[in-house]
Length: 431
Image (cartoon, rainbow, N blue to C red; front, side):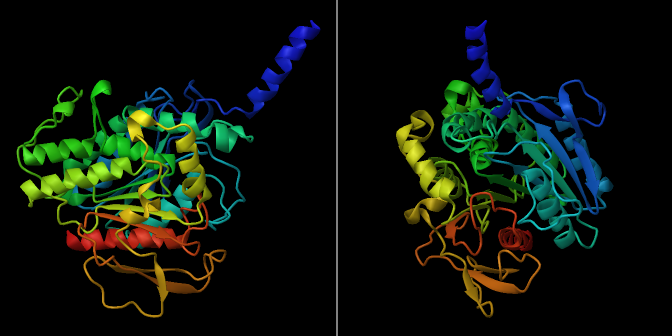
C-alpha cells in the first residue's frame, strides 16, 4: 500500500503540470460538443471581422473537421456574392500556445499586457487589421486561427527545455497532415474567386515550421507535397518526381491563375531551419527562370522571415538544442533559422528615421510606437532597405532589434504588426 502510494504520488503531481492533447472549442453546429471539456466557441464575430478556430491533434488529424468546414463557409460568406473583397488572415501559433482562452483583465487591449495568443490574435491582429485595411467596410477580415498542441507542460525544465524536441517533431507531423489539409483547402476556396480575396498566412515560432512544411515541403516517404510546390509544378509543367506519389493531387484549373495562391507569407521568430527557406528560394529561382510570367515571380516580396536579435529562444536555445538533438532527416545540420542566418539576409535591420527616404522597389517604411511599453504613445518612423547584393525579390529576410520585437513571444506589438501591414499594402499595390 505504501509502495503504491509512493509510486503514484510523482505520477499524480506530474500529471498536474502536463497539458494534454485536447480539444478546446466546439463548432457552431454543436456548441456543447462532447469532445471538448472547455466548450469554447470555434467562431467569433467582431466589428469588421470574424474568427474561426480549427484544431489539429498531435497525430495530425482534426479534432472536429466541422471547424474547418465552417471556416471555409465563412470565407465564401464574407465575399457577399462578389460585393466585398475580404482579407483572409490565417495564423498558426507556435510553442507554448494552443486554442485555449487565458484569463485577462476585462477590456484589456494593450498587446504587451494581454496573455495568450488567442487574445492577441483577436485584439492585436484581426481587429487591428479590420480597423486598418478594412476600415472602409469593403474588406472584411476573415481570421482563421489554426491550433495544435504547442504547449505540453507548464513547469520547467519540461516547458522550455525538454519539450523542445517533441514539439519540434510534432510541428513537422501536423504540418504535412492536418495543417496541410486545412491550408490547402483554404487556398482552394480562395482560388474559386481569387481576384476578390487577399490571403495572408503568418507562422510564429514552431508555427512557422508547421506552415513551411504545409506549403513547401516534399516528403516522398510520407506522400506529402506542399501546396506551393504543387503550384510551381503546375505552372512550369515540370513535375517533381517525389510529388508523384503524394495523395490528393490538385485538380487542374481550366485557366492559368494571374495571382499566386497566397499574397504574403510571414515567418516571425521562426523556430525552423533555414534548409526549407533555401529550398523555396531554389524552387522559385528555377520556376521563374523557365516561366518568368508565373504569378509570384515579380512579387516584392511574397515571403517575409524576420526574427529579433533579443529572441533568446531562436537565437540561442534553438541552435543549441538542434545541435544536441538534430532533426537530421528534415533539417540535416542546418541549425539556424533563415532570419538568424546573417549570410541569408536580404535587408538591413529596420532603422529609425525622421522622414522616409525615397523608396526603391525593395525598401519600405512603417510607423510604430516609440516606446515599446507604450503601445498607444508617440510614434516613430522606421526604414528597411535592401542589401546592395540582393538578387532576388520574392523572399525578404532580416533581423530586427529589441525596438521592434522585444522577445520570442512579442509578435503582436504595433511595430511588428505595422511592418507586416506595410508589406501587405505593398503587395496590394502590386496587384
